[in-house]
Length: 175
Image (cartoon, rainbow, N blue to C red; front, side):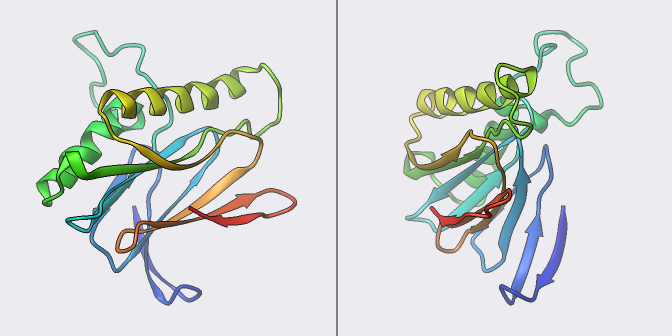
């Protein structure tokens, strides 16, 4: 995690990397860059608390073993990343029954159909949607799949997310 003052936004920006998450009421922005990884933004509008995670893989193939994730950053896996984000948000006063979600990422960044790289992004998307449904957290916006990588900038104070597609056409949108 890196914090810096961004001249464009004229605000502190916290950049998170794979396996990290961040929870805040603002005023700082939180950013991350996604390829096949997925970021889930959660927000409790009533309590004005937002959070974002960045996970690399849907599941850990060793999750059932005794040695699972010994010394590894478990939040690089979807279930742990979502569970830890929820836990920290609740610790800061958010209520899970108020949560809404926005999800981003899961790209096939090398544009190779039916490759392992495409399967990672698709599996991350599938997992994120299924796990949030299991937790009864509605997804109110998404920008998923396709070829471009994405830079995501989240404003915890307003729940707005700016998505910049990183490709030849650089398409900006807001969710």
